[in-house]
Length: 159
Image (cartoon, rainbow, N blue to C red; front, top):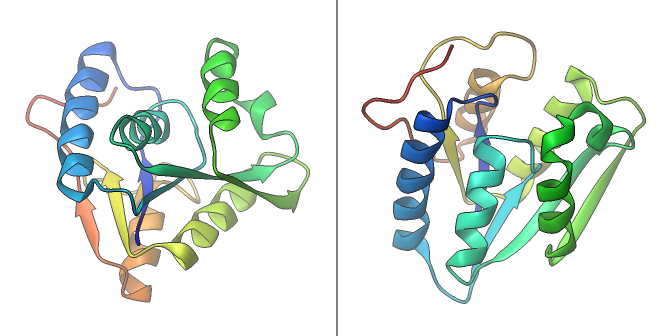
């Protein structure tokens, strides 16, 4: 079994989402097989693009829900996608936080790293904009010895 977790940026432009989706599909296709497990929190952006790629490649999806009110903190336009992917998960791990705050998000990332053989990081290489951001998760993975593959295709950018 190969278990791959994801971390990455949210709020990507449509053009960057297309580039990232293509790059993630290529990364997942290299790891595809019946024993592929993807671990994601299903936030809008990288998390969702990763989950879709894992499922399209025939892998199974494990979702880590950081907090009871996590979905409420996601954009309303993302709720239907979140719900659809959550319903396709082979396993859902719910953390015991109530509020969807940075601490809950970082704890969810650490929980994903506990299970991961590898981390795919949709990351522009810059420092985190707040506690628990992509750079923090990459640093935690490296501290734990979890291999990190950075996915940031040419032409991708953040606002």
